[in-house]
Length: 326
Ligand code: AHM
Ligand code: MG
Image (cartoon, rainbow, N blue to C red):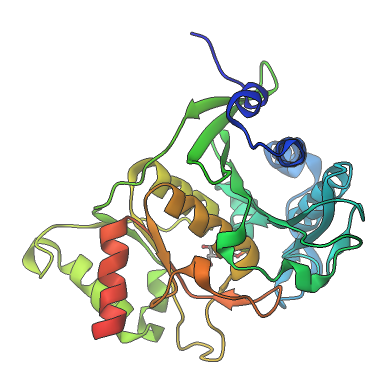
């Protein structure tokens, strides 16, 4: 069977902007290095807390910091890149003043899974720098619809890359024998209906009424309004949960809740929600904060949080309806 490598795919069906293809390849170089550390685990001394906190006030794991450093180190080599921003850094990190792209990433998503050998990932999003000269933090504050490239690498039983350049969503698995990412699925489509939902149920008592109504109806199964049984999954790694939805449909929710009413949600807009929302929309699914499409939310700051509901289109539209009409 002849196989298409990522390099071949980008030559044939990549972006018309060579710098963007080159940047994607460079991101995958970094992710391969992260994958090696993940596979080694305790043998590489990467398990456990780093004893420090990030700008969100969350404890950093050793692998959070290491993954961030690897991405900075590898991606700065790409001349087309102007600057980077990350979940793990308070401010932006300059790359090449003449570069035309801005890269955002969550270097290691699902950090609570690292020490227990469950799937984790890297999420990335690329925007255009719209002026000459050095990039500023404000240049990053663009709506999700302006993304040029978005994707993730999931470090699970396989290391798999999923990305969109705005023309469909494509999936590549890393082949250890050839040291290449190889195409496994092209133009992925998320089924419009589903019988599977993902939410951290331990927060149920804190949810808003529309979310509670939706989940209650799922739990009632054939005996309730939905008249069908639902299944539930929660991996505590958005990358792994979104990956499952791209593979077999479903709905993922990390909504606003009453634990801290001033926080719009747990997840971050710029480097978690936006890239995942664009992938899901490109695959025919939908993504909202409750009432509006996440991709239309104007960002006010780099580390802004947002409520996230995404996945199979008909379910997301039902949840939107519950938010709008009670
Ligand atoms: P992280 O970027 O610090 O790993 O946090 C984001 C993760 C998501 O991947 C996941 O959906 C969520 O946090 C899980 O949170 P919880 O432990 O509250 O269920
Ligand atoms: Mg994350």
